[in-house]
Amino acid sequence: MTDASHSPEPAEPARPADPLGPLARRVRRSLNGDHPGETGVMLPPFVDHHVHLQLADPAPAVARGIAAVVDLGADPGAIATIARADGLPHVRYAGAFLTARGGYPTGRPWAPAGSVRELDPVSGDADDLRERRHHALSGPVEAVVDEQRRFGASVVKVALNSVAGPTFDRSTLDAIVAASRAAGLPVAVHAEGAGMAQLAIDAGADVLVHAPFTERLEDDVIARAVAARQAWISTIAIHVRDDASVAETAIDNVRRFHAAGGRVLYGTDSGNGELDPGVNPVEVAALVRAGLSASAVIAALADPWPERSPGWADAGVATFVPDPAPADGDLGTPDAVARWLATARLVPTEELELS
Image 1 (cartoon, helix red, strand yellow):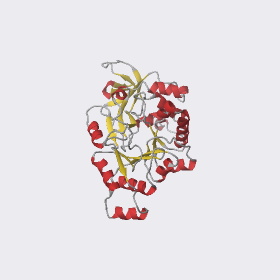
Image 2: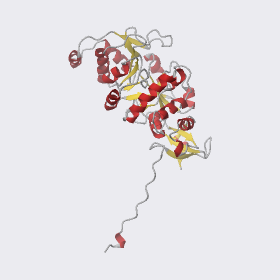
Image 3: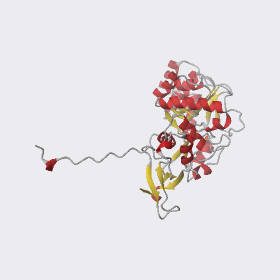
Image 4: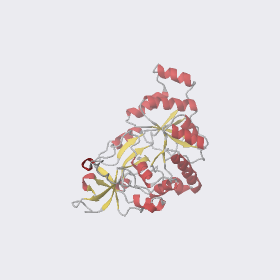
């Protein structure tokens, strides 16, 4: 016989998972704020993972929901000064583009003075490179990587653009990756041209700064990128603007990369021509078309890269997206998700109350 006095308490019914993902919290704005009682969703501060602050004013993006940015190509001294400025956005940066002698973006009129470091090929095979590192011998590659580190860089940016000029061979790219790892910095690669994305993947680059757009990658290449825990920064809106067929190639690559478990980061390449500031609805819609759920798009926007843990973009603010949120049935609709997230604004966390 069961003792009723010791019967277990009935379990509370499980709360349904929020279709917007674990980062979402239902809130209302404080009655003492600018929009008293407004309801919506609180999310972590959003990050644009690919910008160029010497080419674009970040203020409009901050006004439209971006709390932090990652600058991926600038004069090291200039970007270090910009990053020290008070207020938003918080800035992480790569410093200069590292490129082959005469390679992209050398000589481009848009490239700020001092933003490119050209390197000659590194001679020797993998064993030679390991021997040199073992004896802590410094060469041009180590020196240029150390320059970025001393200017406060959080990442090393490499240009592999065979369409626009010479590129690094595998030995030189290996040397850059090794020197960056020794300095504690991830390597982010601009890969453009046939075989360039595969070269970056096989050399162990941590991030591709554009979702591959030159060619459709084979599934086994994508599988290697996923297995290596590589991340891809989206930047699809620039292709939607300029060339629909290129955009479709990028979307197809992202679709298969994401489906295989790849890590996608939101980024716009702000400074590359005209783009809507803030949470760009074209970028968001392209990610949804590539198979990312609304919660996966939010994760791409809130990802802390290049930091390893969240928090560097907080500074007492959160992303607030007002109601109405898309109905559950519309969360897979690119335009619905894009329109809603494009209304995101930064709000002091003290002005938001859980509802």
